[in-house]
Length: 71
Image 1: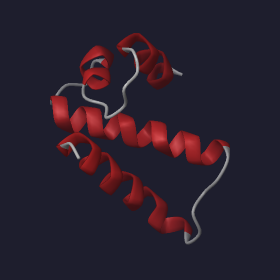
Image 2 (image 1 turned 90 degrees about the horizontal axis):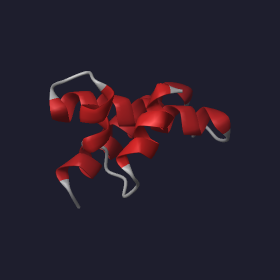
Image 3 (image 1 turned 180 degrees about the vertical axis):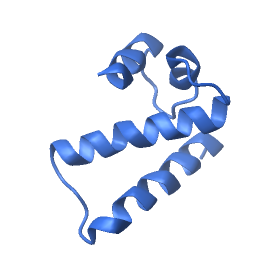
Image 4 (image 1 turned 180 degrees about the horizontal axis):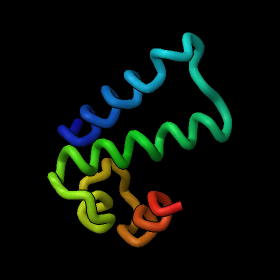
C-alpha cells in the first residue's frame, strides 16, 4: 500500500471515531471527501486544488477529483 492510502485510511478512521457507529450514505461520502482533502493538504503542503488532487490515493482523473473536492 502506498503512504498516501495509509494516511487516508488513518484520517478516515479518526473521522469515524466520534460517531460510535460507522456513518453510511451521503454522510459517509462527505467524510471520504473531507479525508481526501486533509490527506492532500498534508501530502502536498499546499492548499490549491490541483496539488491536493494529485496526492489523493484514488486512480481517477485529476480533473474529476478537483471537481469532487470543490463541491
